Image 1 (tube, helix red, strand yellow):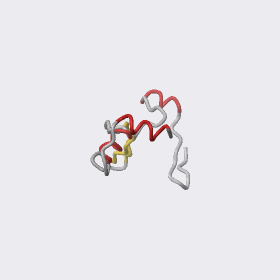
Image 2 (tube, rainbow, N blue to C red):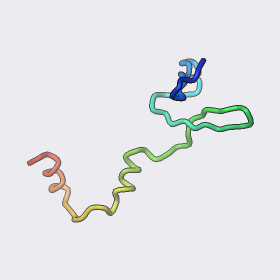
Image 3 (cartoon, helix red, strand yellow):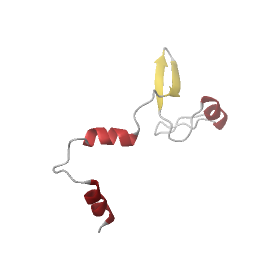
Length: 75
């Protein structure tokens, strides 16, 4: 198995299945001496939750839910 010029490598399907590495699984690399370990990353907040946390309190005016729905539906 070779690493591409972009630093990519294909993890064999049997290894992915045994490790539970599904598409879009976050992984992390741990270096121990001359060994590199690939493992599932610790649970991180989902993208939506991270976005909400960043956006919270950024609105310039308060809108009611029906006003937001009207804006998003274009009515």
